Length: 305
Image 1 (cartoon, one colour):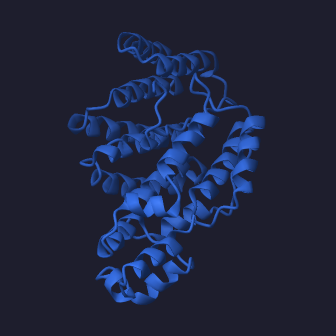
Image 2: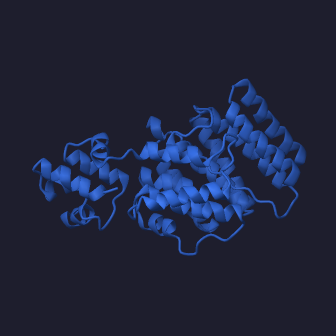
Image 3: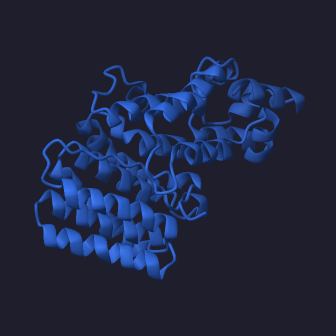
């Protein structure tokens, strides 16, 4: 996607100068580099610049010929089966090649999705993740995270070194709290905490996982609108109990979630929990068992439509 080129085209069509478009938030030189596809800006800054040139984000994406929300949602529908499991490696590899054929630019979501699939395959095969981690490098160089950075962190926390995921969680929690007043972004924090919990369990960092559960509980005291957030928290408490070999508590929490899914008619989510519960009951004491789950709810993706 030509983020900078599209912005430049709109700016020139409205007869506006670099100075007018940059406003108070960035220099003309920085804007020029962005327009020439030599650098990227945060989503917050991009939206501010669009406001400077009297253009809505919807108009911008329309002129760019892209709908990133739909593209990402469709992507996850293709790679996740009905019971919540990721597709088999062969299907994931086919999807990766399709994305590569689109020749994405360095900051396009397609490139991030290629990286996502490559590391998801490694997780499925219990292989180490890439040492050269450009997701980590990108997140570490952005001072004020916007919506884009929070989404990247939510989806890619599992491929970062676990200490880095934990270190960045404070930034993610603080910044995502700013977005909880925006309807489309209210799930950001809960999605981040759900995915981080899975990451910490995957790496057997029970101390980090426990802290994540406490943060989740505290958030639900103030933002309890989403059924899936309550279900995820209770189910994760069950998983944590299994990890501590408190089997009865693990069963009790997970079975409560399954009952709630039936009562609330969360059929597909119920299937996903049932599959995971069955696996945990069987494998909780297997030292070689590992599970990674990614909740893409921030994209409007839902197992129950």
